Length: 310
Image 1 (cartoon, rainbow, N blue to C red):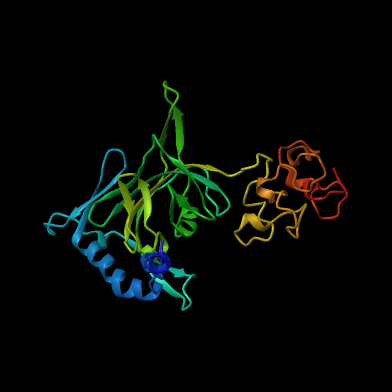
Image 2 (spheres, rainbow, N blue to C red; image 1 turned 30 degrees about the vertical axis):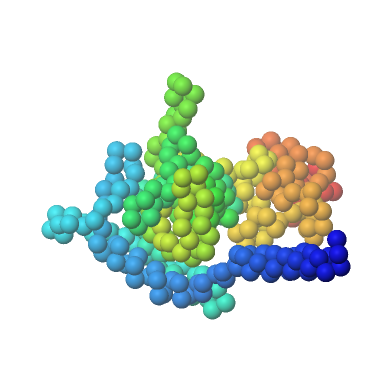
């Protein structure tokens, strides 16, 4: 190869490298920052939610499922706006904190165990768009567990449930011959949810054919089938294991109060709360099944939280 061709060849190689590098950089997808949360709600969602409630009616079917449709005859149909209640829920993520108007329809309160912010609840959930697109269907045959403190249902964060679930109770259940259970008398409610209290800027994949779009208000029905009030089975209710009473059971850890070792579980998940190698439920000298009322040395600390006393 002569020198002239050699230099042309080298020039083309390096030109191609720089061009491909430039194209690669230009072709990289850019990340779109989330919209302003307050603007999104007040400019795009608040009025549309109210309009939806004013222009739609509803029915409750035999399975206690909520169904909605366009209001066509106000003389014979009930508009949703006439039957819903409203509470205000703060947006604690936005720099400029504001309140959401959260409309909800109370269908049934539930009949058995009360729900606290420290529990886990087995729920049925149905999630729709305002155009009646079904996104999530979790009925009594396919219920899902959710934490009340950080509620997520089928991958969808539903922050408002932290405030709503404790207003309801669980239901009852009977075993069916095929090994499944039948739930009844459960809590049941529907919430008309601004995206800021759910997915906001995230598109949530439901399955290979469906996803919940970002920045989209939702219709969410929740049924409270069953509640686990003692997750570690130590005979101390989850809510009692929230020692500082802040509604967060994850930051109470008697055997590791400074949270130095992640292997040490918080009390509500720890069957040996004080780390004395004796199970909490066995630190019950009076044998009444309640470890919280046993204080052998009289120091004001029940045995199950007192490493020096069994």
